[in-house]
Length: 115
Image (cartoon, rainbow, N blue to C red; front, side):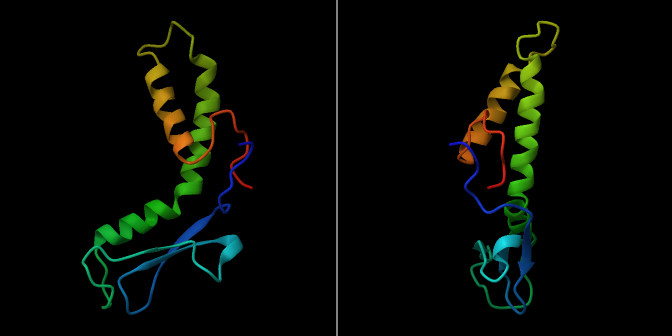
């Protein structure tokens, strides 16, 4: 895959008025939500959502920014991968970063985050 296939960021998390759920929207699709984060309390009715529901929505909305940061970190850190002076070695951290990037449907070699 040469570039990301997801809706480009930024994404936002907006609480639905009088409900305890959040809508995730991208700037390209402001009219239709990318995702709905339901309440973790078992009911979406009511004015208050839980802190967990809010945190889940914020984490999902930050996904494009987090992916971009991971790709930048991988590109920078890979230059030191075989550097014996690194203490502790960064190979395990790079492996974790690459796994996270691949979980988003990209490879560490992909240079574009946005479509």
